[in-house]
Image (cartoon, rainbow, N blue to C red; front, top):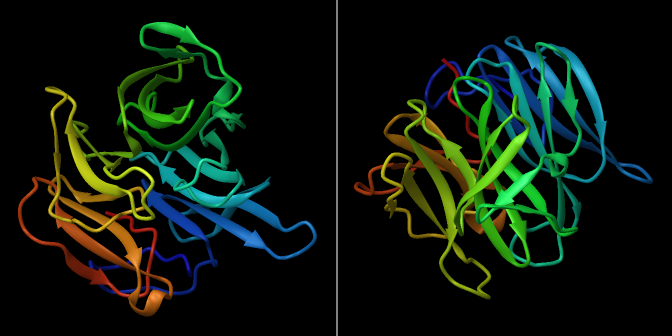
Length: 267
């Protein structure tokens, strides 16, 4: 895909770098790239508001998730180290966090001490992915998997801690008002298309499905406090399209942009 900061809700801008995954907020953009070769190369490219390159970080693996905090300060990306899908058990991820203000890079989130079920947890099969940041640029939410199960994690960067909140949550995405999380939930075991989009109220910890009944293997983005955007396979099985759906569980899904992926609302 070609990275672009869209000037309107459905219009496209061109001229940015080609990216496998892209996200933008707060005058900062993150572009994950792959380059052919033996071995193939990958990069996390930090861009300014005009999509000019500011920093480039060499990576290994297949680009999978990209996020930028609302202020533009904190960046995170997930790479498949092995495998290429969450639908199988034979995958491994590496998730990194970059503080663009200080330049400090957390190369692998697996170094963060994890508390599961109220107890400090250690396991060689721990994987993180799908990070999202709160407005304070310190608290974050992510998915952690271990022993065949996935959990929603709440983390504190300054305290360098993370704790699980509930099971069966993947690719959490925090609403602009920081009160809800959109996520994909596994609703069918052993199925090829096992997920459905849900929204979790962080105050009550109650969840509900949205009106999209198709399986969504994406980290949904909030266009505003009421609308989710996400990618689904395109017609004919080629590429992907961006769809939207109300976050409250009502309404119906609507095609927003054909032949596109990595939605992000830039204000």
